[in-house]
Length: 83
Image (cartoon, rainbow, N blue to C red; front, side, top):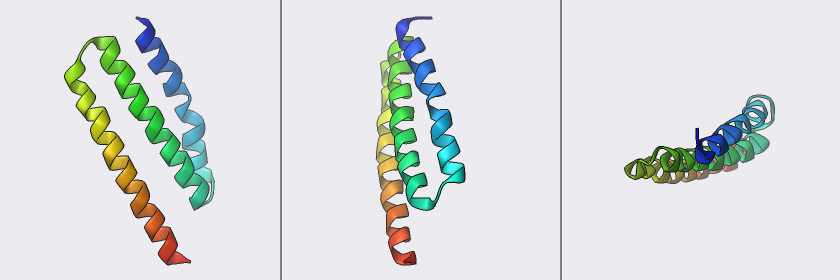
């Protein structure tokens, strides 16, 4: 196991607090935790791509960034209409 995979494993452990906040907090705090978890997941995917030397899979990380950003905007718009 190289240093890239170790870094991905450490960041995967950091996802646990984000999951707890998403499950137990109010919607605005959960949205922030969701955005942080998307950043962590994207970083984990990039680290795993580098650690396994499979560079074409980095497209998956880039697609995840795009979809998570669009999803956060949609949730924020829905929260705006609820108030």
